[in-house]
Image (cartoon, rainbow, N blue to C red):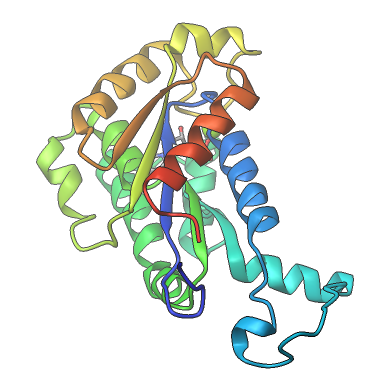
Length: 231
Ligand code: TMP
Ligand code: MG
């Protein structure tokens, strides 16, 4: 039996091209983890043996407790100073050299590393929507040298598992199409997907993202459980 108080949180990443369903599945997984988590009973803490317990937390306590179990993060984090520069670039309000943009995306991860590390060490699981694989795939799709692209992310924390939501960009377009952001173009997404699949390593679980939302969700939490990532 594992105990949240003695175990670090899991670092779970979702990757894939735009419109593959990453955000939906990441949010569903967080919700699942939060609901599924059992409060350690008073008995297991060595008090009140033989008593019965009610666990009717107030709403505010429930929220705090939920955030301790699992949190949803997302890259790019558009709220920071660096994130705002990235946002302007993606929305085409600002042009930047491809190398600069790549380094900004990477720096946007680096600026969160201490916080991420501390959250994981405190026992909270992090579910992260995009990470360094996106950084490499989208920059290398602009024909930047792939090893140069990888180098700025060397030393970032390694995820325990990566769920790659695989969807042909032709299928993604059918899902209501892309928005107006810079990379949301069919040919570019096709290039990025190819590079993504070349980046696949032993931490990856490639999912067929054409499946329904409940089907994918089930595969995801079962896989997380099989890999001992759920407390
Ligand atoms: P989003 O749609 O998930 O907010 O991501 C915005 C775009 O940024 C998306 O097309 C993927 C791209 N991207 C990079 O080019 N490099 C990165 O490091 C990350 C995290 C995303
Ligand atoms: Mg997008």
